[in-house]
Image (cartoon, rainbow, N blue to C red; front, side):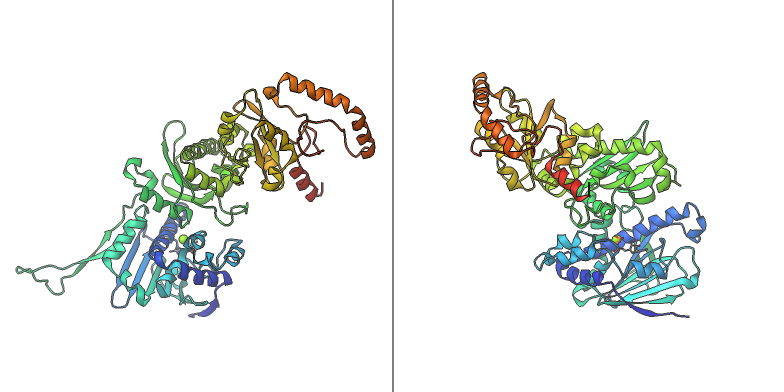
Length: 567
Ligand code: ADP
Ligand code: MG
């Protein structure tokens, strides 16, 4: 029976559709990239599934994407012989947005932000972008390996609801027909479509084909009626981008490919493409995104690289190949070191995985190091991802020093909240005789900046790093050294300014301490065991007193976190 039903889009989809149509108008040609990207993914998935079961190809293993248009009807049709969808898949994939946190994200966007294409594009507009150019979309699809009668037709005008119906479909895979809006008729054009395929989808490994009609001519050069022959012409390059030599790939192609693998809308900041032969063979193409996805701090959010084994797609988000603190890195890993039937479970046990992970981690850190040469770009990176990178020293002791070199801090050097000072610069500015790297941790930048512990440092012109991110205490408990210099919390333990102080100053301090012994005794009695000790200090120049933590005591932030956790 032709079981037809009309269903409502999930609220988030309705919101997204509204925002997208408004904000992406000037970028509307990207709809084609998004649909081709989905078809390419569907072909990848079928190739993978067919490794175990060749029958899924249904005798048609030449994977391809076809694009046709009809000027009269104002339609564009995009067809693939990929994995296809059954009814359940269609309802889930083309009726909802699966990413958690989407609702909150969309609700938070202010009126002005809603017009910002980059913000909307942040979580990948995907399939729904078809509605920027179409006032109706029809999808006909059948999951590979299912019965001809199990085809599904999905239709919608993009206005809140869609219908699904059972259809018969001989061909597995998916066909999408866009009924173009009046102001988008320009897209029903050979030249335009070819240009877009080359611009956005050249790097797709699956051939993207378009029909070409030729007519035989008679001796006088006139077309012979009825002699039209249509052939399919491959429009894109159709080889995996990462497998091509670096020298032949343009920046535009690298950027277009990024948008496909990362499902991102904006350009990446930088990338690193490496082909490694020898003991461990792999090709990697890693990218640093231009901005953080809205769900970066959702630890269950997608992360990791897209894994291929000898050009065969294996899985998305293979998180085993990069450490958690580099979870913002996107890209592709292709290796012959793993077998084609590798699974997530097997990845966890394979010692080669750790070796590749160590190698990719190094690539990732080197890529960031290189990015530091461009101050502005690196600052953009740091502002988006710095707090994630700060997890590094705790997670990866082997690369601690390397990561330390990539960290950026606010500092008394400029006294601004911008985290823009690297440790190497700090070390360069150290006073003669200064042996330690000083820092203070507080709940906010302003609290750090006005900490009484800084008084003596300011007086002597010694720079102090001003830390106030939630993770900073944790970070500093793992950062022990940089460039041979240890770190010292100015609010902890004995104050040691190294050789910055001269003998005379030290002597004067000792004398003051002696003279004030009585006072110290009285203060101690008054506090009656509420503190461990009371001492005369030269930390302060203006304030009369301050609280100091013992050297090996947990910092304030850590205490608060532990307290909150009920410890
Ligand atoms: P994304 O590609 O980021 O997952 P999309 O909105 O582009 O998001 O697509 C949503 C989902 O719809 C895809 O994940 C996929 O499961 C399904 N889908 C879309 N197009 C196709 C297609 N041509 N063939 C099979 N499945 C598809
Ligand atoms: Mg997509």
